Structures are given as C-alpha cells and as structure tokens.
Image 1 (cartoon, helix red, strand yellow):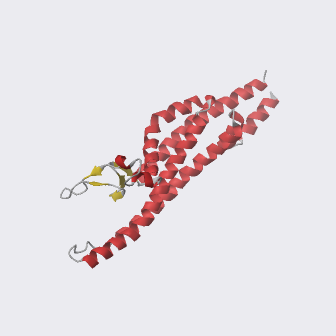
Image 2: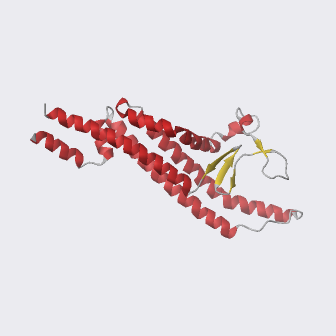
Image 3: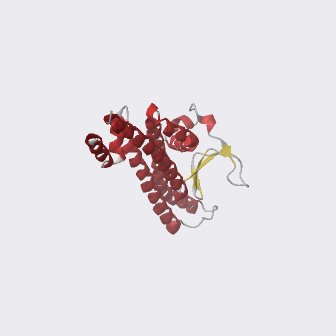
Length: 223
C-alpha cells in the first residue's frame, strides 16, 4: 500500500507533459509532441497579437484612395499599401503554421492506441484544422500556383468588385479574413478562441486517458 501511495504522489506532482512519459507506449516522443502542442498554441496567440497590432498601424497610416487618373499617385499608393500589408501577410502565414503544427502534434499523440478517445475527438474537428493547413499551403509552394505550375488551375477566378471582371485571387485581405482563390480564413481573435477551444478539449480528453493509465499502473502495484 505504501509503495502505491508513493507512486500516486509521484505522478500527482507532475505536469501532464511529464505524466504522459509514463503513461504512453512511446513516452519520450509523446512528451515531446505534448510540449510542442502547447508551444504552437502559444505561437498562435503571439501571431494574432502581431496581426492585430499591424492592422492598427495599417488603419492609422493607410493613405487615401488616389486619383486613378494620376499615375504617379496610383503608383505611390500601391507602393505604400504593399509596405503596410507585407508584415501582416508574414504574420498570417505563421499563424497558419501554428494551426498546422497543432494539428500535426494532435494527430501524432492521438494515433497511439492508448489515446483512442483523443483520436475520436480529433476527427470531429480535423476539418477545421485541414482548412487552416490549406491556408498555410497558400503561402508555401507558391510556384505551383503560378502560371505553368501544376496547381495553377486550383486558383479560382473571382469577382472582387461587382463592377470589375473575374480575376485569379492570389491572396488578399477582406475585412477580418485572409482570402486566397475562392477560400477565406478568419485571422482575428475569433479563430484563436476556436483553436484554444479545440486544443483545450483535446487536452482534456488526453489528460483523462493519461490519468486512467497511471491509475491502472498504481493498482498494479497493489497486486
């Protein structure tokens, strides 16, 4: 009995990234994936804050629409817009990377048979993670999406302005959404809250399984 109590106290004094080492059939790898999941969730929060700060700067410094009949004004407006948007697009890219990496770590953890319940939950939210992974892909392997590339046809033509014709959308901002082709992604705290909710629920299910596995180990010491 004393041995089992000591073991229980030992486990209870640990964080879950430490407990999973003893509960998992692949302890070292599972502990690494767990820590990385937490890290990437934090990275997403950092990126959203950066996007928000850049958006504030954009609103404060964005020049007025130029007279399109004056070519020099239109040129200067375009240059300024690109300079202001580049940091936002960079942070959106890494925000999508954080979503994608959270997905990869959740998949890695949940593929282990002892965490079958976590896998069941992951499959219920995987579609949203896949959507943000596709957002990441819109920034990477971009040469495939340019004319002559093998995925050029996947970049859909859309009508951004009712008065304009169709054109291929290679990426832009519309309100609080990043758009590419005919797809859009929320890049505000709303999507961050969604990510935190999904990861939090996944961890809750994972923690329950970890505690059950460790409890079985403790009971084994009583035999």
